Amino acid sequence: MGKISLQPITKANWEDAIKLKPGEGQERFVAPNVYSLAEAAYEDEYFPCGIYADEHMIGFLMYGCDRSPNYPL
View 1 (tube, one colour):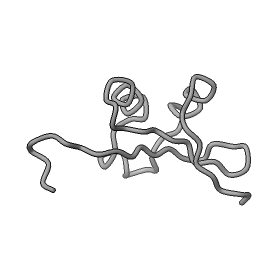
View 2 (cartoon, one colour):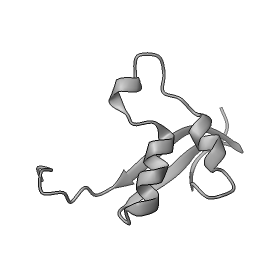
View 3 (cartoon, one colour):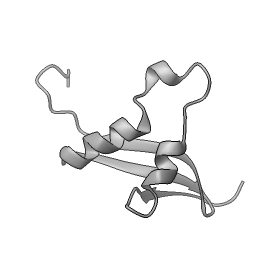
View 4 (tube, one colour):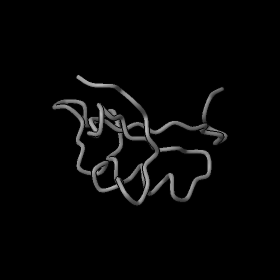
């Protein structure tokens, strides 16, 4: 495996991000990437990133702060 880096999702790489799928049996733990990208487009506190090995996107993550009243802090 090459150099690992995080890069923001942009109009240049969003299609690569939505092609990524969770491993078998992991689907119930995360939202589909396309849903996460839509959420980040409308919520200022979410930041989607691609996980890269060299120049190839190998994973997706989104970080942020959920400030909803039902989220225990």
